[in-house]
Length: 206
Image 1 (spheres, rainbow, N blue to C red):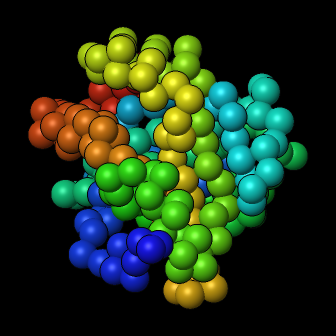
Image 2 (image 1 turned 180 degrees about the horizontal axis):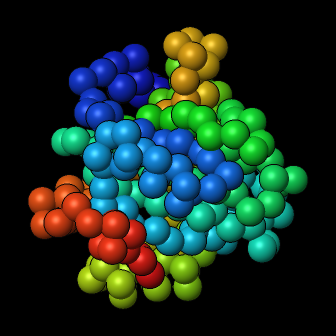
C-alpha cells in the first residue's frame, strides 16, 4: 500500500529563513541592514555537482550562486546572485533579472527523498533539485567545523529541493534537511556577538 502523504507538511516549522534574489547581494544586504538593522552577514559562493530543473538535468558547469546569509530579528535571511542568467533555475523562473525580489521560504524536512515523494503524491510541482559539488561543500565544512566525513557521505544525495506552490498559495518552498540548521544557529549566534559596526558586518564563509 502506498504511503499516505496527506498530512506530511502539517505542523512543520518554516520560519527559519526567507530567501531573496538580487543582482548585487552585498548592496541588498547593506540596504537591508540600513532599514532593519539586520546582520551580521556570512557570504560565500555555492556551486553544484548536479542541478535538475523541472525533471531535466541542466549544464551547471561554471554556474555560481553568490550567497549571503544573516540574522533578521529572531530569524534569518538569504540573498543570492546568480552569475549566469542563461541557465534556468529557481531564480530565473521566479525573479526578474536585474531587480531584487523575494524567492522562497524554507522548511525543514527529515528527508528530501520523502519530501519529493510527498510533493508527487500531493501534485505539487518541483522546480529544482540541487546536488552538492563535493569540493565546494568540503571547503565550507572546513570553514565551519562540520564533520568532513558526513559531507562525503552525502556527496551523491540532494542538498536542497524547491517546490512550486504558486498555483496553490503564490509562493515557492525550499526544503532542507536538519543538518542545515547549523548555519541558521551560527547566524543567530553571530548576531548576539556582533558590535553592529560596518567593519564586522560581512564575514567570509568558506
